[in-house]
Image (tube, rainbow, N blue to C red; front, top):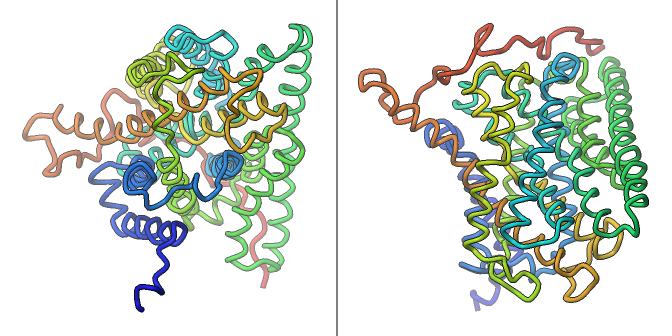
Length: 482
């Protein structure tokens, strides 16, 4: 009789397992981050794989009816909130001083990565050129979620110059939105009736409407929200709990505006975050609240568990429309992408990027280009455009259609590369820390392996740790009345 009341349904098990994982991680988060040098994404992904349908089968999101449209919206919210968070956390008026460095990372570095990855996809997976450009565009941006998990709130991050952390954070927040022109270049090349029509749609719809207008709208939202919140806070109209919640609500609001108007969601969110925190006032008011840590633990970790549980393992093998997609070819593609997508161009452009001072720093920035949730979103966006001509995908990839070969190759390639990137970049901190430990003489090593806290060798730390920013100081605005 007692057993009959137990309801171990998949949703109930999900609540249990996911919350238990987050509780355990929270209890030992400092030890995991600062001693084991591990971040949430690889651990959360591994958990998703283990409890997913292909191992223990505790949870199966596909059996719940969680279709690609749900995955798309989850990714939209997670990335949108994260890029907004980066915009808020950057030093005040950051782009006014560092536009050239970020511009080089978003320009030559992204273009090179897009083209070189497209070449690898074209040669290894034997696709046509538009398909290769579409797949490559999904893998072009660095992921703000993975970047945030490594660049902030850890012993390792304190060993990296602040200007590099800020530049990589700014790049990761911008380039998810900046990837839309790359993605739609491939889509229009595949679907447009003529080159002239494709170029016209690309310039008017993608560049001017989605990207430029999206960034402007986001900045206006952020600046207006800043003034409204300062007024409300200064007159005592808002309490401290609501003050903190405002941050999350504004991020989701900006994503909602972008998606409703058909703008570039991520540029709207990033523009809103940057405009909202441009003067540094909000960051100063909340510097002890640790909001990004809360976002990482709850929202981002849950997304990676979900990702691990939805990996399409069977699609990593050849099929009718993907005869050249094999585990061996995908592994070679992953290695080539990790080696050549960013490293050569960042090293070559080092002298044109003011925030990169040494070749060791260029090597670090070239390696640190994780691919994650943003790539998943772009992959579904590409499929939606090819399947329905809108931003709404079909529940699952169609068996037949005008672009079935392209649609069939996108999902397995993106999932495989993202999985590899999560593991490689998520474990890179541990590898660098252990390597740094054993590169020292026996007498210079810390008692704990990887326990070093001093600056990484070969990097420049001007002003003590590389922190020469005005950060969150300056005009504090009105104080609270009453």
